[in-house]
Image (cartoon, rainbow, N blue to C red; front, side, top):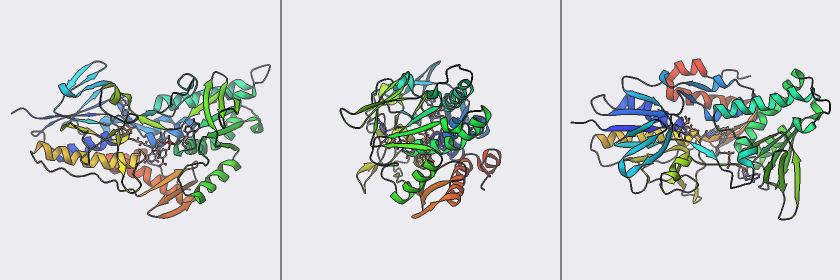
Length: 405
Ligand code: FAD
Ligand code: NAD
């Protein structure tokens, strides 16, 4: 009898959890498992703000996929998925196509630009290793060029971060630590540098604990970050951005670097494949299958799960993607063993910790607030745990964060 073929698209947090769990639970005689990913490496999306600021080398945030999969059980294909043809049970790749019996879509997120003019052309987003490397290089180039020009352009030393959500704040924390190093390296007067965070909502980290938010804001302000709250980015231009506080009040901010960190949507493949979604995220059934499909699982940032307590979607996080990966693997194992009862996915949110640079953070974990080195230590433990879950102790030793003081 032909073995069922399980195809996993994307080797991020969700996809790698599915692959590493299936390689343990499913025998080689039971199913064929194929993992498809754009690169031959996995990157820790949750560490990309560090690589973008240049406080952590980009090689530290990635590792080879072959190091964590059992190649006797999982076939790895390096390829870019373009479209899912769910009715035909196949995926179109940039170089060919692949058919499946069960498909797991774990292709992560893309920046949500809300149709704002000029963002795609003139702003960067912290989305992958290539983007992180480009942001780091771009900022460094501005500092390196500043003193070479007869007429000094101060806008070279201006960096705008759009959005004070978790990504924006974590990036600002790293940037605030990196700037003094860049000033020293390129003989630039620190007082000439401007880091401006523009946030549309009336507060930084909307919805997060106000006491922790105050801690983060005052920490970042002390390090030179200026906040423009209740101010929306309306347009990005080759010279910088246009912001507005209402319909009429607009202001131009000149900046050579604009980093857009104001939200995400699911991978565009979802919508391009005609699968019903909200901002590229599929409201999955409790067993993580897409509505109307019995063999299509969608997890991570491409999925949408409602928090019934507040009747709003859970924010897409690595924490949820990994938990979904485990349930998804168990449900696929059940299906190939002809079991009809599948597990329901319920997020188990242990907390949220937001880093403010290498040795500082704010967080709420297990119902307790924490700040400073304690929160920073907790963040590193969370980062190490994610490595452990996928690659065990050897991956933690190779890639883990141990610089806790
Ligand atoms: P990802 O982990 O992003 O993986 C997607 C994978 O799909 C990648 O390997 C990518 O290369 C691959 N891929 C994409 N398109 C294609 C294609 N067309 N073909 C083939 N492969 C493709 N969450 C937390 O819980 N805690 C945090 O501290 C935290 N920090 C964050 C910090 C930053 C800077 C950012 C940007 C996000 C952070 N998040 C955090 C959110 C978290 O990173 C995401 O929710 C998580 O990565 C989602 O996992 P995923 O498996 O859906 O996607
Ligand atoms: P987000 O949606 O959480 O925050 C985006 C911010 O941008 C919001 O505060 C929003 O008001 C603001 N914004 C939107 N449009 C704007 C505009 N035109 N001008 C100015 N500001 C504007 O997005 P994110 O920070 O990219 O996070 C994405 C996901 O990743 C979230 O689910 C988040 O929880 C998760 N994440 C978690 C962590 C962590 O746990 N430490 C870190 C980073 C990201």
